[in-house]
Length: 120
Image (spheres, rainbow, N blue to C red):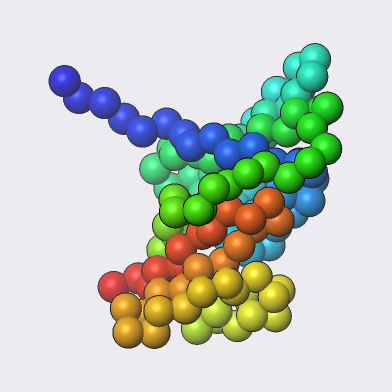
């Protein structure tokens, strides 16, 4: 059986704040939005492979999500690692660096970790 990964869902408290972060930090853009009673879905993508991240904002949710040990992450390959690192440093969102592996992680407004990998 063959399958294709379509999207990954993460829940966010402030959709516009999260969307602005993903646009600035990773160059993603909103591909579509679904406003429903009680929640809004925003799909963001880089358009490279059709894979999307689905940002879900529940209108009645006010407290941060419990991410547990936060051992999951989404990885992004960047064209210019040094420029990305500089931008993320200026944004104050770098939360962990592994210089031996040549990668680092940034944290989005809701505490999700995103791995930044250089193009090799």
